[in-house]
Image: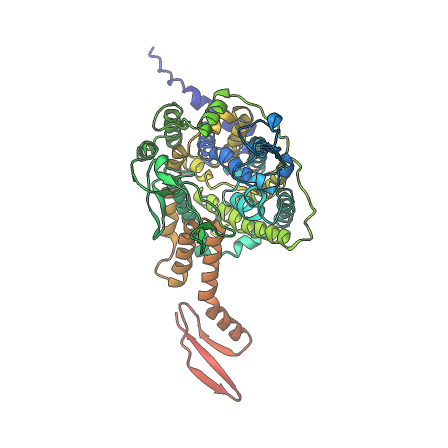
Amino acid sequence: MVMEPHPPPKKLLTRLNLAVANSRVGKRFKLDERNSTFTTELRAGTATFLTMAYILAVNASILADSGGPCSVSDCVPLCSDPSVPLSNCTGLTHQVIQPDVSCKFDPVNPGYASCLEKVRKDLIVATAASSLIGCVIMGAFANLPLALAPGMGTNAYFAYTVVGFHGSGNVPYKSALAAVFIEGLIFLFISAVGFRAKLAKLVPKPVRISSSAGIGLFLAFIGLQNNQGIGLIGYNSSTLLTLGGCPSSSRVSVAPVLALANGTVSLMPGGTVSGDIFCVRDRMESPTLWLGIVGFVIIAYCMVKNIKGAMIYGIVFVTAVSWFRNTKVTAFPNTDAGDTAHEYFKKVVDIHLIESTAGALSFKTIGKGYFWEALVTFLYVDILDTTGTLYSMARFAGFTDEEGNFEGQYFAFMSDAMSIVVGSLLGTSPVTAFIESSTGIREGGRTGLTALTVAGYFFLAFFFTPLLASIPAWAVGPPLILVGVLMMRAVVEIEWDDMRQAIPAFVTLILMPLTYSIAYGLIGGIGTYMVLHIGDWAAELLVKYGVIKRRGVAVNGAHEPTIEEGNVKAVELDHRV
């Protein structure tokens, strides 16, 4: 009797995926329906988190530049001779200087600097907490693979325009949080009643399609810069942008200045000093640039070979190499800032409780015009920016139908609106769906388990913030650039032969990276679309009210022979198929 061979035992991961898919969890998140697996969702969530983990440190640093709740009262008295301790500041040659508003600016008072450091740590926790809550809502209720965190762009507007550097703007930090809180409530209301979805559908089709590719270019642009990327491009005073790639020792800051009659220069009113964006020499000689390029090649090769986890491999490799000290690519240079960062990194585990930013809202300036200016700006940016991002990510994942709708859009809209309210209560700027979610979608993420995985990592961030805050920019840049490559595929759906479709699409596409704003790209595209179609709309109105007689069916244009009818000169549209 010949025994039939037993089928080979299934691998552990295969058995795990089958078990989860057939469980209540798998059916709840529709793993089979969306052609995904449990381990794929975990890998996608990991990739998404690694590409957006920089937000923990970057958002905290940007918002801390506003000064947070720190004020002159946090400054400490100093001796007129900085080298003399305050306790010995006596005699005729020394005097105690009481702090004034200048203590917040260079040279920053030690007391104010200490307050800023506490605020920065508070904001790391606030960023993690608001992101966690947003991801849980998005994953559990909307069942979409989209992660949320405080948005880049709105955080800079919050810190440098509304509050101002170290509180030099019109709106105090606590009042700015109140503006974000009210804006979040308004945003939540228009999302709850479904008005936001209707607003989104008013966005013309060519703008909706091109916004995905525009966001891809925006991501790639970020990945090519120094602050959140590999540093391949830099500032040029004549052409605005040029080839960069110089080491940090060869970069300088730039600032708008006025030349005075006495031969001196001063900072232009309202101007700010940039980061180190201008290469004075040694272009393409930055070791971190070349390490970032190696990371780019690793990810690109894995993508070409269709190897799962491509983004993760590149990020982990570059980060691991950068954690060694005393090398030319170290994330911890031998400077005061580098030493401080390394000491924080060596803690590995650190639990920090929010001390000053939580519940710091103040409504004292609610009657001022600049308060409402900031509120309205936050609102329209969130409506355009977050809505555009949601639709672009849903389209990238293949969730949208012909009308632009996608499953779970109601709770998707609700989740980021609720996250804005929660974030303001914790002390951070508006929370939005992150365009880095496209990294996880590229890895196969199709359900809310991806978002819940990201939420899990943000929970771990409460304990492992020192490690996550030490992922260098040149490790994050390569995946951002390659995600831009993937998102460009949307341009093939644009009707380039029809100029009324192509021009608004191109304006949307080009303005997003060059204005550093998704919202401005959408405004430019929608505005251009309206201008190019206003003649057709006017003609339709004239037909509707009998001023124009329609003959045939319109397709691409109108011939306009005129006929006289009494005292009314009517235009007859000869529309041919």
